[in-house]
Length: 236
Image (tube, rainbow, N blue to C red; front, side, top):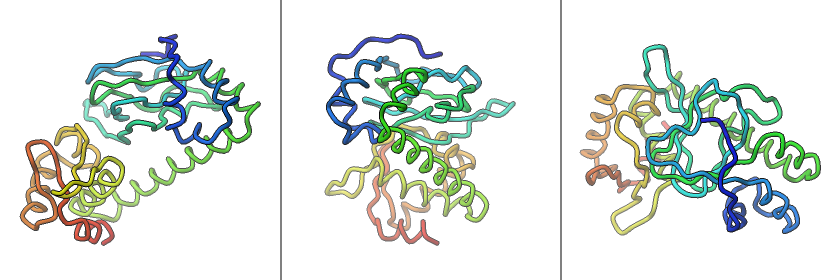
């Protein structure tokens, strides 16, 4: 679904402050940005935009989670990232333009805000700090992509699964008396797509990690109960 004018959100300023590229900007700069922001709400499973559609806007998440993925000719998904509150996505089409390089879909009920590229590019020219922050986000995405390529080339599926669990426990985990509960509403198939393997293989590896005392599984929730062992697996 291409970016269209959504609902103007008078309470968006607090959400903007949670977004890295906007945090720390002056109240005056935030006021300029607030006037450019539109908000849309998506139900779980709704596609926000499809790969190949004209890249018209940069998005950030107010609440919920979004997966960004590519599909092959047979319809298999290869998940590139899962983003949560405060994360920016679709920044790849900023400045250079062109189509969206991947599809974005809400993995739970999600509220996103977006700024049209032409508006944000004009603002960047007036706000050097904002330009620097966006460059840093793009550099971070590049590092993530390079790490993923390295993992696929050098690590087996067990190690890649450990690396994935370690990353998402940092980004989405909540420490409890039971361990680090990973609040990420994705299916085993989606976990497999993130690792680059089959659902059956991921299920087997998670079962193995449970037997080893690294994780516990409570229904669909994964709980890291031995963080040191998980980190050691991820480093090997």
